[in-house]
Image (cartoon, rainbow, N blue to C red; front, side):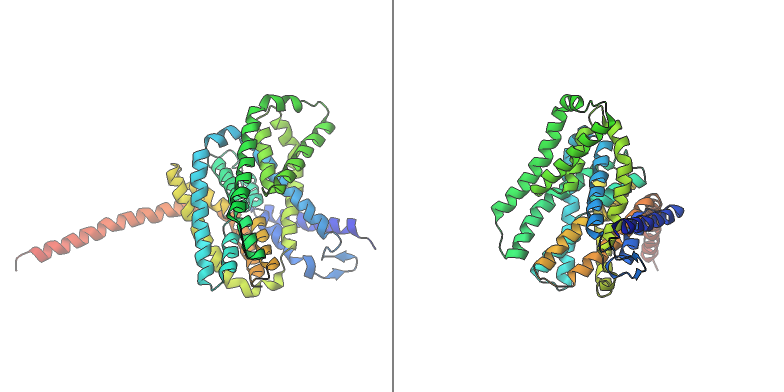
Length: 417
């Protein structure tokens, strides 16, 4: 019997419970939604007519989750400002290259020391490098940081990561799946992705007046359909040229955020963002098999610690170069620490290429750990910054005391007997 509607209702009920519990303790809903999805899913029991495996609705929930990513990033773009983003071009390049370099090299070193072969090493390095744009957006919304000075840098690094991801996926796909790769093909893929991102931002700014006229639609019904048509068409177009669909949604939001209709679009998107965004994190949890995680536990924990160190170092370097205080710098690192959909995509290449079977459970547990701790650390960035300052001041006080003690000993040794 078809229980499609019942399964969707059951999924929404579980999502509601997870969100109520998270709000009760004042925490981000992301880890709660992922965990509740992981607890049910393919290995959950069937009780009477309640099928917790979500067999019939798995594809539908997954698709609605993808819609959630689009709405999350589209809204984030509307909240931002393309003019400010273009003016921050230099800082974005510096921040993105610093962040990618530190985290990618750390991933390569970690995988090499863990004993992986070359192909597996490249896959693991990719898994540990790319942030989850969906979780990044969720953190910025949950903690009301969309207007913070560091947010434009976070968004810029996210887009920088996408250009890197386009080049990296082209390269790693050739190595893992075919055993060969073309430098020209990799360069072309990265160039197309970069041209799409920069070209759309520049064209959108140039066509602001035209967009104002095009979206001057009195009917709310027609306005909704036109906005959503643009969103899905542009996201889908970006995906066809190897630009992540979420980045296409972010770019459209940045462009339309410059128009006089931005506030109307924000009010329109908010309920869709919240509803489908929750489904995304729940569907992500459904994709994780909890019984496969045990063997990868220590490996994933070690990689998570290394990633935390890497993003913190990168954030402090970028923050110092951009003259940002310690709290905004930590916000950058802790927000970008989240790993998610892109890491899972890269991990799927290992499965397609018949590489080490340990990569899949490692990726799942690694993503779960960082998707859970990133919102928690981002929330407590003020306290962590205060702790850093306290340690720094104590160290600064202890050094002069030690110097004075050494000088006193030297003075005593110089006294005549």
